[in-house]
Every structure is written in C-alpha cells, then in structure tokens.
Image (cartoon, rainbow, N blue to C red; front, side, top):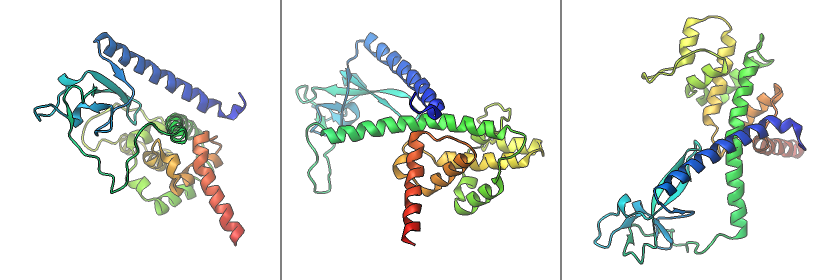
Length: 273
C-alpha cells in the first residue's frame, strides 16, 4: 500500500463494500427469481424512458400501482440499505402518462445523457460518500480506544468548553447511544421514550465523569456529520476532526478534504495580515 497510514480506513471501506455488494446481490437475485427486470435509471417526468410507478397514471387517469410495474430500479439510501422501486419501462407505448410536469424556473432542463464531466462528478460524489461512511466507523472505534485509556487526552477541558460555547448544538443534540458506545458502557437497546444510555451510565457511576463529557461532545459532533459533509466542509467539523488529529487520529482522505479547506483558509488569512 502506498499510504500505510490509511490502512484502517481502506480496510473498513473494503468491509463495507463487501457488505453492500452482498446485500445488493441478494436483492437482485430475489427480484430475478420473481421474474422481475432491473433497470439502471428512472424518473418522474415525460423526458424519462423509465417512469416510477408513483409518478405515473394509467390511460384512464387513475394512479398507477405496483401491479403495473414491469421493472424495478434499485436505490441505496443514506444508511447503505438497498431498496427496489417499481418502474414502468416503455410507459408511453403502454398508454401511461406522467403525473407531473417538470418545473425548471424558466430554464431549459437538461436532456440526453450526462456529459463526461458530469459523470466524473457523479462518480466522485458516490465514492466520497461511501468513503465518509466507512471513515465514520473507523473514527468512532478510534475514539472508543482513546477513551478507554487510564487518563483523559491532553487538552480535553478546552476541547469541551470550546465545543459547548462555539457549537452548542453538539451538547443539546448528541446521541446518547453513540456516546455510551464510545465509553464502552454496557446497555441494552430500548424503545422507551427519551431513552439515553449515557444518562443512565452517569446516574449509576460517579467515576471518570470527564470521559463521559468528552464522549457526549464527540457524539454531538458525530450526529452532525453526514456522508456528504465533505462537500460543505464546515468549520464545525474541521474543529472536531482537527482535535482528533491532535490526539493522534489519522484522518481518511475524504476527512482530509474538510481539514484542508480550513487550513487553506487560515493560511490565506494569515498571509493577508
């Protein structure tokens, strides 16, 4: 490997890719066993070759149902779960009409296939989103290891007070389950209202409260990081990742995009002064 420091991230990406591929293969096999055709694209408007059932009307004007579907499009949600959406291919010849008209604000909607540049942008988007999901698993495991040590990481006091004063949403909106996992607290999942295993842990133990506080703040930051956060590269996330790096974390390349944006901005501002 050219970059051995990325080993953990690459390994996690490979594991995630295998799991996604296995789940996708299973779904495709199930659909094909049922004699259903798989298409690669579909849409909601008249310029689409394949029309989603939810966007189609029958010849008599009634909404189309899944019984009218003659194909399926497989999509993947933000959690990496695959779903089969019913589609009508060749809908014009079959007498279906689209429910909706495309509104483009007075501009001409693109017709025809994507350009090579658009395809490249789309490929980068998909690849970086997947890499960010894998990086989240590595990052959270790393934090759990960090907080399992006998002493809290250096500078934790400023890290927590900075987070609470500059990004107060991390304290008010943190995920108690993620925080509890970070400190290795034992708990059983519950569906009771306002369940928070970190709160339960703190109520039961007065030892090492600083570790719970660090986990709370980290979990708050984690809740705000989405798979496409590399696109906006917010200062909030740069602050968080920067602190983890200072504590020894090696960021994934997609996380480095966030850090580089703010490093470049700070360098430019310093040069201007």
